[in-house]
Image 1 (cartoon, helix red, strand yellow):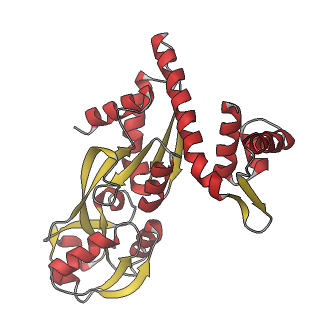
Image 2 (cartoon, rainbow, N blue to C red):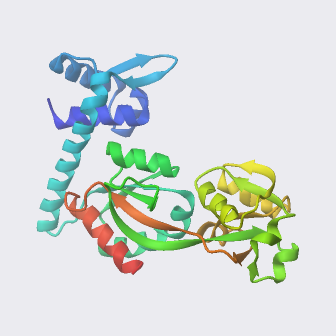
Image 3 (tube, rainbow, N blue to C red):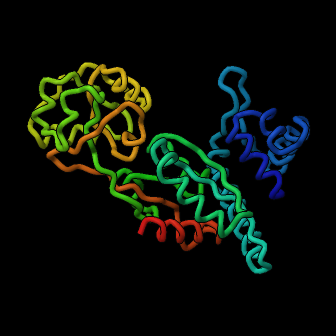
Length: 289
């Protein structure tokens, strides 16, 4: 039983392919297959199910032991980082889960400050939905995740970053362009593009508070698609300022009813995190204090 085999198994599950794992780890496919088979033989149980149609999945026992393998890999990474820090040779990898607006508006500022101090630390990014980020945190695929407070597992340690207000977005030629603040009642007769993804609950809360129902013309999950539809004048929408203010050919205004989402960084345990992760969270506190 070796650390290398654990790494190979974890990578095969992550990528869902022996071939992709071999390329990622600079190994031959046969070497990857042999490492997996050897570990399964040593443990006397199958860990992976190989199916041409469904691809590679974990067996029941594989689902139970993989989190422990990932935890061992994390501990080894922490050991290497502690040694590197002791010899002034900072090294390691930080795996971060992020959603679209955090990637474009929060992450660059953080990375810029952190890498000036620790240029040798590497990063790996996983972009997904709130739910996917929570799952990746729980399973140990990522070290840190951008989350929205209230939607995250209460067992996670959180570092609050910003409060992101909900705003109304519309085409620059829309009648709202002269309004700094738009009343929810002003939306009553507007063709409304309802988000069905990550911030839908915030939009629904606003309409509930206003005791009204929007005139929904479209229901769309993807944030970028919603922005493109607003750009084409197909309707107005409500969404997070952090994302909408960066979109071209869109104007935004405040709403007369306040609603925001609090964006934070989450990890399973700050105390048990690697030195690199701890320092990244420390930098985040400084940047968004």
